[in-house]
Length: 398
Image (cartoon, rainbow, N blue to C red):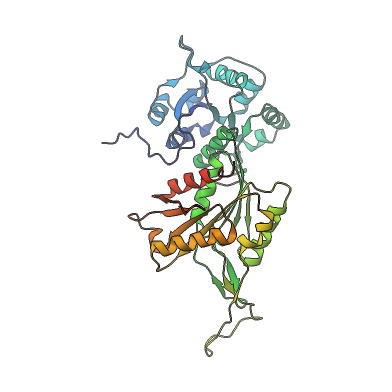
């Protein structure tokens, strides 16, 4: 029987990592229960230190329940605050706490822990939360500049109701994961296309492929948490990422998405890998001017084949890892795999993710299959396994 202390593991981006959460005395400390449990959902071992002022906002008992570990609040002989951590997050980070850290004040276990983490070059993430008047004070700006100058990362929300509130706990933990994993070896720059194309047929109607964009978002989220630099080129989507990704280009038209891909592929920071998860329109037409009147006779459309985006950028991405997607309907698994292999042979891609439409949302069927150039087929059970498999393929040319 599961204990109410348990959490449902949602990813492995902090697996085997020891994370320290420092909770200071801002009102946003009430969010620390959610934050603690979200950190654990990604596999981390969690330790928590509270400042004395934090006790006035939330009790150590609440955080002990959330973290399933004793909370450090006072000096003791074990000096656990001097332990080596893989990452430190200060949330909420009051201006008082930030100022003490920058100026080397060490008047509590929390401040000693931050000083030791700085000495050990431990990745640190600060989440400032305070009234807007305090945040906009030039002194605060100087303190935040000093934090960034030391190599710490800062995450904050836009002003709302006169405050800089703490961002959503999912957003914070995603940034923590990226902060910790960013310095792992062989991190890649990855471009991901996702979502559907939509092409007008008159001024009010359009044809569109069926794609929510959910798979592309899940892949992008996983890769970002694992420390890779990710740019998303998103078409029309009916789903949203679970946190704000740092670089998203949106254009749902076939020509607009292709133009965005060409710009990214030819840019100064061209990607190391391309993941083509978008449902690009294979056929569309030139729209008529204005709106075709309703209630008339049949309307026959002449659809012409459109350019394949994966082919159009190939000359700019030959040195990149290239992963295609193939969706088939009403065919056997054998036929699906043959079509995926044919795509590899025709386009020179490094892998193809092959899906049968009827299986995608069927919990009793494979989530998908990855087909490799040598004919090997990797079967995946769920989104997590799909994301981990795709990440492993980023290194296929290393």
